[in-house]
Length: 86
Image (cartoon, rainbow, N blue to C red; front, side, top):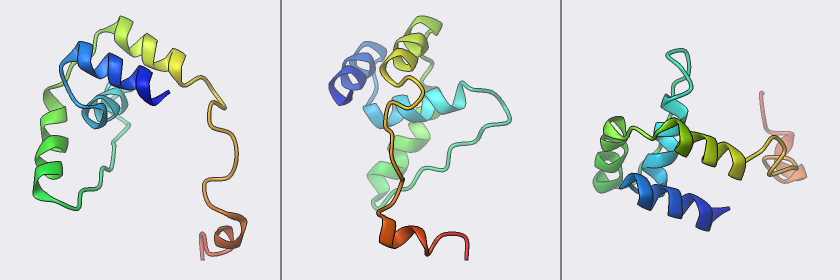
């Protein structure tokens, strides 16, 4: 999956992270990505994702890489699930 995303990002001319943010942004005005960044350069990279405009074909290719249930399982290990939504 990672290599396919990297290939699509290279085609678009951006990083994988920027492509991921652009894909979320392309879902509609009622969807807002909440990226994280430990360093200024990653914050700048995230902001630059606003200018990334993947084509409908590129978005379709991303959706093909990540079909529903492409990454099954819990988000966190069982011992951490109890700490959610306290």
